[in-house]
Image 1 (cartoon, rainbow, N blue to C red):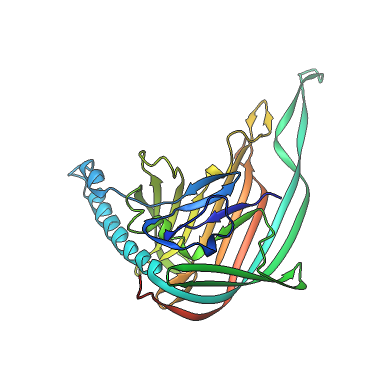
Image 2 (cartoon, one colour):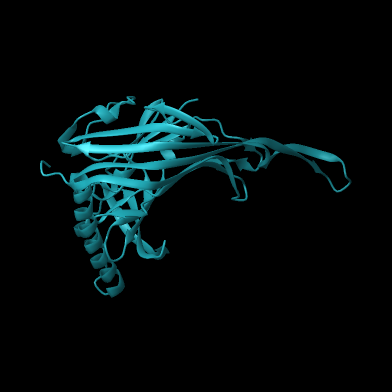
Length: 328
């Protein structure tokens, strides 16, 4: 099975293309590496940037609502930038349980006979909807460990269970198609000082997320940003300005040349979503609590047909070190 590897970018992290051993690579101090995906070739996902001065020039002076939103946005970007710099500089050593449920749906393409008013078959075509044939479910439990010390980061797993059967496999690899790395650093690739030069932002709403009031900000790549053509929505704590959740739309995972089911009513559109929720807090810094990755088709009516779904729950955290790295 081919694996797709998400790598959350952080300041000074050196990533070798197509390498799965990036946890051993050193940090560079002068550049931040964005989120990356490996699938035969490298794709880059990251979000964040706003050119406030340029945007303000286009805001009518007689529109106080837009002026107010820009003031709020400016404050949000400033405070989240500070939060991300804190995340970048922190020295870490923690372990937790990583519980994964994998679901793969297998479909058959339906077909219909189109009849004329007299009941005669006039046309045969493939339906735009898919019929579920069977579902494969697999579950995993890992001990997950992340250590960041003196500019180096290391991520390890021990497989404890597979389909509720006891295992013990050290230095285990994830046995699923989509694989995320360094989820803790997700906000940095969007809202750090470096990446706020490459994306535009807008406030798109407010929501209550796990009991916390959140401002939802949409991040879009600037036209000049040719590398990262991805979009995201980011839930930001309205009071503390920490990152509560990030939702990517990593369209670049799907190659344009990949075959799509067709019918006379059009193609089924293949899409992906990737959501990481930061629901665990320690010393003012948030850690992943859950993650959801879906690959799905949208039929001609806009109905969602899930092809693959990977649900991650992170719990039973044990923190051995969470402090600012004085060498940063």
